[in-house]
Length: 190
Length: 307
Image (tube, rainbow over all chains, first blue to last red; front, side, top):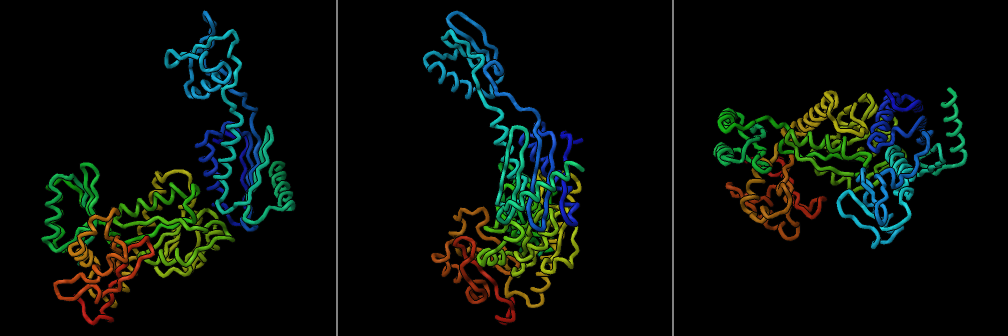
């Protein structure tokens, strides 16, 4: 079963095998990069005679930025705040953010998963990582991997809740772009 | 007639195998030591194979036929990018190696795309130094048909692989076409995928048999394994080459992995028991691969004798 609500792929000509294989390929790559759960709908249109490759996708609700309270428990202690780290994956980012905000001399790490800050301001709301930006970066990487390799003229339009990616061998023209948008719209309404 | 086999077993007492092969008049083509394991690629006279089998059994080793031993196959992809590697290309190359072939992976400089795919003279000449080539293409039949220009000028048999079913008449320049192995993003692990790899090996085997049959019509003056043995004996520096296989065997000669300018005379001067030198029965020229020496044994029709 597809984890996406809609996943349509259309290839011109007698290329049923290509369409089937590209479906598997896209799933494999999105799964490898851990993106599949963030994409709600996906439409892929390939015209192999022109040739071009287009992907239009709708994203699931935005991912909030990761804050200090998401990676550990913040407690008020004598002389400052203590953070008990639960998720070590973002440790390097967390320390960098704390050093920038409080200065190295006020951040102490007595144990591997404990950080103590000598300050009266709580670090709870400090942003550790911008997950949305990382996601969009990974998504662009996935689209470049998915597109056939020779299609090196690319355009990627990303908005808050959707993305539209075209790759072609020849230069991209406004006509081509509007033609592809029309085809994708047809797929959406079908 | 020499039989190509692969011995896999423990390092302990493997010398017995090497000695027996030499006593029987066979050749050890390649020796790979991996910690306590050893893999030997061997050519042994067919009538004496039973003797080697009983020794392998005694040493608790495994002896299997390696139909592609003593050949060099080029595995060619449109480029060496993530789109083709590591999955399909590495799987095919490794599978060919398991059947005894020496494989070289090649990515073309500008092999991508449908309209823009190209191959240059150097790449063509390098592929022609091999005994066969496997071209790995993708999932769209239009592209696979269009990319025929990449291998049209290649003189060695070319096995083309791709996803969809395509009739042989649509690819007249390919020796054979093997379907169901187009672009994938995972390793070959299902039975059907392994089956496709088997079909590639069979197809390459048929391509090599065709070349062997055409060589048999005008046999080579001497056999490539014999040249390899003599070069190894008389040009000892070859053992100090950093290459894992210092002398690579082809169906029509060998590639000696030593710098051409410094060693061409030494290779030419290699003499056989019959009193002829290698320079007299083979052409010795620079290989397109690095700075190596390419030895191509002349056929009997040119030298007038066979030994």
